[in-house]
Length: 203
Image 1 (cartoon, rainbow, N blue to C red):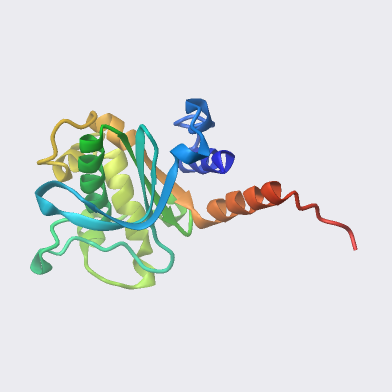
Image 2: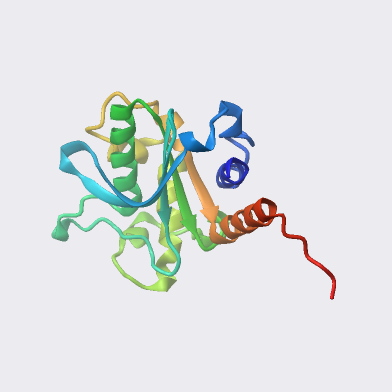
């Protein structure tokens, strides 16, 4: 299991966080908890259900998974001041701060970040819709927070206002990773084959 988790982190961060993220820390399988659909509460009673999360003695990792649906955008008229990425970052960072854990956020989608991204303006990326065609907005907003605007991480800093005593804004951006379903399936399948000792035979 730990080898598979290491590979997931390697794929999500393109080797930026190390190829042996979990095994280098000498974690046993019992020290790594994988949770599906757990609800987390953050600052000002914000609450969100996280598609998947990993909790270790020193880390809290959120996975936001999308397949066919686009990103849920901010909608002030419905009392939603933050999009899905911003909300997960706020709550995850607040929870990790209280637990004294490092926070990592991984967005899981159907294609690599560069393939989904479109060079559109913020007004277009903010336009509310629920069409598959608008899946590019997930990549747009993820890049907007992770890479900033005009070499400034002000967008990320702005959505985290009210959350104190967290890592530097640069560290938070570095810990945002992107993963594709194909990479995840590949890793899980390889892990199953290795764990069962399955060997394909020619017929």
